[in-house]
Length: 255
Image 1 (tube, rainbow, N blue to C red):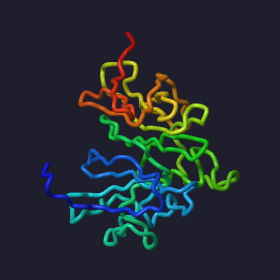
Image 2 (cartoon, one colour; image 1 turned 180 degrees about the vertical axis):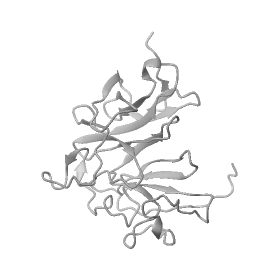
Image 3 (cartoon, rainbow, N blue to C red; image 1 turned 90 degrees about the vertical axis):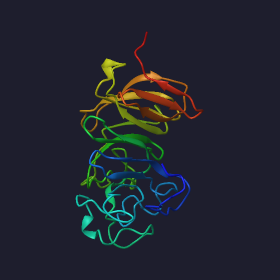
C-alpha cells in the first residue's frame, strides 16, 4: 500500500459521538460495503435510521472502480438517484449508496466466506440485542422496533415491511452484541456452518445455524470473562475471539 496518498471516498456527518457503526468490507461481487450507526443520541432522536435521505443507520454499497470517487451499483434500491449521491448532510432525495437501512449500530458484521451472505450484530438500545441477515432493499426496523419488539411507540407499532432478526437476546444474557462469522473451518467440526457471535459485556458466545430463519433461539457455546470487542476469521475459516485488552483466542475443540 502507498502510505503517502489518501483519497477520501465518503464522509458521513452524525449527530453525536456514539453509534458510529462497524467495519467496511468488499463483497464477493467486488463492491465495497459499509455499516453505519444511527448517528448517536438515545433512541435515535432525529429518526436517522428510518430516513433514507441520509446514510446513518444503514448499510451502503458502492463501486470503487466504476467512477470518481465511486459509482452506484445498479441493484441498489435507490440507484435511480445515482446522479445525486448523498453529500453527507440530511434531507433531499433517497441516498443511492444505501443497500439496507433501519439499523441502530451494526457493531461487527461479516460475509459468509462460502455463500456471501451478510451477517450483522446490531447493538440494542436498552432491552434487546439482535442478529440480522442483511439483504438488498430491506428495512430492519430501528427505531420503530428494537429486535422484534416495539420501541417507538412501545406497543402497537408498525410491523409491515420490517424484517425480523434471525435471533435476539435480552439484557439478562448480555448488553452489547458483537457480531462474528460463519464458521467454515475444521478445528471444531460441529461448528461448521454455524454463525458465531458474542457479547461485549457478558463475555458469552452463542451460535445459530447459517440456515436459520427469523426467530431462531441461539445456543450458548462459551462463557468467558472477555470483553469481546470483535471476532476474526483466518484463510482456513477458523474463528477467533478478540478481547478489548488485546488478546486473541482461537475457538477450538475441548481437549
